[in-house]
Structure formats: C-alpha cells, structure tokens
Amino acid sequence: MDTNLTNMDETALNQWVKLLPYGNYPHPKGMQHFSRSSAEIIVKNFKSLRGRLSRKFLGLPIFIGHPDDNTFSGRPGHKSHVVYGRVKDLEPKVDGMWLLIHWSTLGYQLIKNGFFKFLSPRWRMKILANNDFEPIKLLSLGLTNNPNIKTCRLIDQPSFVSLSDGEKLAKLMKSFGVNELVDFEEQLISLKSLGEDSEKWKNQCKELIDENKKLQAEIENFYQVIQTHGLQNQKNVTSSEQITKNATDGDQDSIPLALGNLNTQTKTMGLNHRTKCFYEKKDKILTLVQERMAATGDRYNEAWAWAKRSNPSLFID
Image 1 (cartoon, rainbow, N blue to C red):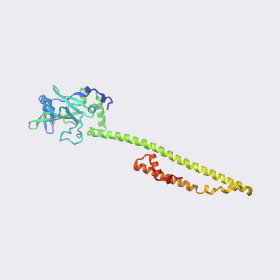
Image 2 (cartoon, one colour):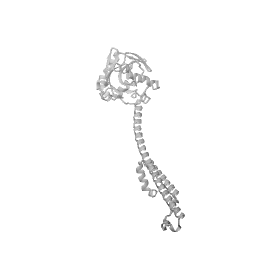
Image 3 (cartoon, rainbow, N blue to C red):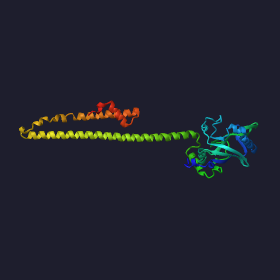
Image 4 (cartoon, rainbow, N blue to C red):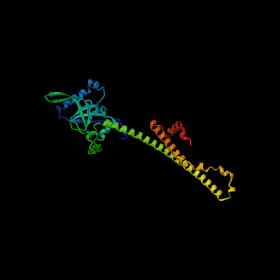
C-alpha cells in the first residue's frame, strides 16, 4: 500500500464513476431494461427520506462480491461484509448512470492496483412483462472481475485513467493463475497473521542464539577446567617420578624422610574415573537444564539456577 495513502486528501478518495450506459442487459432470470427513466426512478428512491432512513443516512455500501444477497452470501468471493466504499450520490447523464463514490483507503488501493475491474449493481427490479424487468432501486454494489454486465471497467474511468500500472499488475497476477481475489479479506488477515508470526519467530530465534552462545561458553569453561585439572595432575606425577628416580639412583641414606609423605598413587590412580564422573555430571546437568527450558520456557540461566537448587550434589566437585 502507498505510504502516502493514509495522508491522502479526502477529495482524492471521492470519485465520479460511470456505472453503466443505458441499454438492455440479459440476466439468468430475464432481460433487464435499463433506461434513463429507470435511472431517474433509482435516483428518486436514493434521495427520498425513506431511502435515506433505510441506509441510516449513509451511502450505499460497496462490498467484494454480494455478501448481502442470499443468493450469493457465503460463497467464495461473497463472504466478507467489509465496506470498501460508499455511494454518496447518483446522477443520470446522457451516456448512462454515474455514481459519486467515497472510497476507503483500502478500497481505493484495490481499484488503483487493478485487483477488481468492475462494479456489479445489486438492485430491486420491477416486472414489466413475462421475463422483462426494470431496475428501480439500487441496494448495494459489489467489486468483481466477473460481473453479469461487462460494460464499464473501473480502470478505464476518468478518475483512474492514469493508473495503467494497476492493469499491468492485474495481468501479471492472471499470468500466475490468480484471476480474482475471491477471499481478499481472509487473505489480508492471513498475511497479517503471518507477519506477526514472523516477528515472533524472529525474536525466538534471537533468544535461542543468545542461549546457545551461553551454552557454548559453559562448555568451553568445562573443557578449560578439565584441561587445567589434568595438566596439574600430570605435573604432580612427573615431579614425584623424578624424585623417586633421583632417590633410587643415589645413596639410599640420602632419601629424605619427607619422601614417604608423597602419595603418588593417590594422585595418579582414579584420574580417569574422576574425569568420567565429571563428564557424567556435566551431561546430567545439561539434560536437566534443557528439560527445564522445554517444560517451563525458562531461560538458560534460570533453568541452570533451578538445576543447582534441586540437585546440589551434581555441583559438588
């Protein structure tokens, strides 16, 4: 939608549009005879007090399709009761019936971009004879691409003659197999919902990335602790072995009495077991944290704190 559309002058949304010229139009129920005299009757009914009261002093509504007609209501293209414009005035001219329409911003955009090419009148008719009818009262209008009377395309109206880009867009849509937006309102709601979901997924993705970074940092910290612990034990083992070697190579009487306090066996034996236990604890902690996050939606640091509170033995070295 144009960014400037919401700031449009009211006059830009008010357009005189030719509904149809005078003539005879076939209909599944018979022949419609639309003459200047029938147009004048329609105008008279429109401007009468009864006519204004029946529409609560508003203009006649313009829908997508004819959702207000029991014959069409509920069918594809006739489901939404959203009003995209209102007929504010009628005028019978030499070349046919003209309407003054006040479009909603969305309705104007639909016409401008060529989504709908025709206005289909819904009117009350009087029986003339046999299957001949004369329209006498306009009830509403429907935006459509497949009207019963294909005479005046909206895109060709003087108000929209400079909007040929909309026609190009409509042809492009047709080339992709989209002949008509039969459920435009539903599609609009779906697009809005998709946009909201996209924003939600974007935020969730950012949170997951942040949590993953924290998890990676914790893993790195684990490895550093393990490596530091292992190197320290290796130094102790090397030092003990060297002292023992020096003692055995020299005079036995020169071995210091304190050497008996160096318990090399306890420093070297069980190191693999301690490392294995450390990894097992780490895996249990990470499993608890991940299960907590999945079950409650807690953040990583919250789930970690919970795991530490509920399983303190896993955090004791």
